[in-house]
Length: 231
Image 1 (cartoon, rainbow, N blue to C red):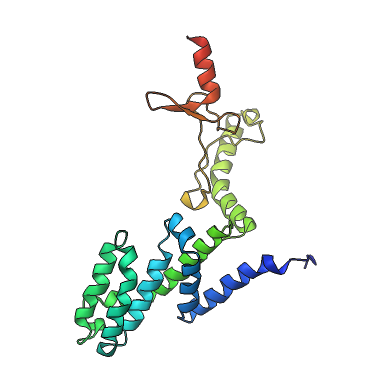
Image 2 (cartoon, helix red, strand yellow):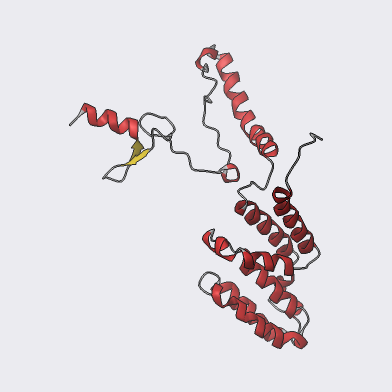
């Protein structure tokens, strides 16, 4: 609508993401597995479980076929070797399911492996990790701003009402700082913010957190004031 000229190299990562997501919604794991293999190093640095969960779904697809796919599933389980340290319990469950192929997984205590929730989960995990690698949020900035505003409005309206009742509306004069702390939850926490317990100010690049010998952390300004007041 804005007639913006966007270079193809900027659009391609998002087009690839949508192609892979479309394949996942059609229960096709191969494009996502290829993508995860290409970005395996970065995914490990992020401590991502995406690659393991893709292999887990591939394995589950094999055991769905019954006894005829038992040997193929056994060979495919070699892909779990590099995930043994982090996902040992999950791998044990997957391997245990092989014992029930002849009687049918759906008739065993492993029937939860056939749940469609794993497909919904893998779409969310792939979207999150792909966006993280591209330095993007899963949601648009406008959507995030609106949702955060909806969470913040009720306490702000309450504090405004209290100020009007007590006729202290002039207390909230600084437009750059809210009169109360608003807890938005972990979903809206994109980076850590340190507030000095002494000066009640958030840290900045020029006023970073400083760790004391005793283990407590205060701001650099507070440390300077304390040290100048007492040698």
